[in-house]
Length: 287
Image 1: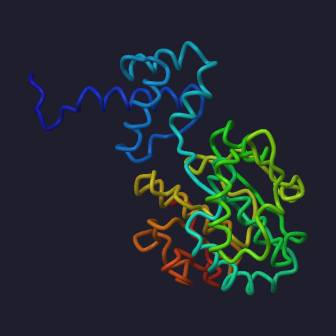
Image 2: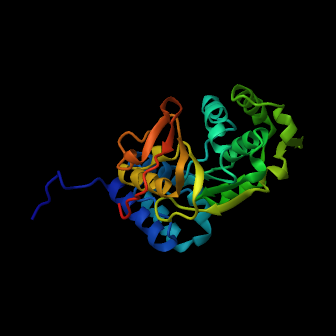
């Protein structure tokens, strides 16, 4: 009996699905609900880096050469960021969100999908300048272990400091960015004191659960790589994590407008993609 062409998936689609299933079953990294077009590009990048002719070959090596896992995760995740990326977002945090956060006796901030740490250091410096650093605990989470290690080290190429400095100034920085790092040998190392209040830990928005109540979630340019169902799952985690009156910041091209959890938030500065958790007491589970 012949199969209808409508039901037939392309070879590339089948290979990708089998590869993602193997990655999940063998190593518990769940990319199955990420954007298909993005995943295809990332898997092809992994093939290129590891000299695999096809995604099926990549799957074979994934299963039989476990030492390649970090290289594959590097290729499958995106670590493109910079200090104070979209400076107007951080200016809005400083100007409009910080005054509300100052009313809490202690604070917890979740930087979800922290990549190489640029977003974390942006907030740590901002909180230090606003007098909140010493009563804030930061959680920097990431699925990519190598990226998490880079975030904890706080070391960046010195060539990036010019752009970082311009962003910092545009975001309303109150000092000189060079006050917060030491330069040498082509690298800039951020002050160790900036990470004394940070817990660096692996967390997967696709499979892990809420771990703490927080007052600010900053998750920028992560949801754009998820499909609709996984976006809803992630926003549901943020909803359950946030204290009433807490804040959620997303990337410039991300929104809650179509989320199943939108009713749990009020637009605070929608232009800068900042929402506030409503005071409603109920939380819906199992979505």
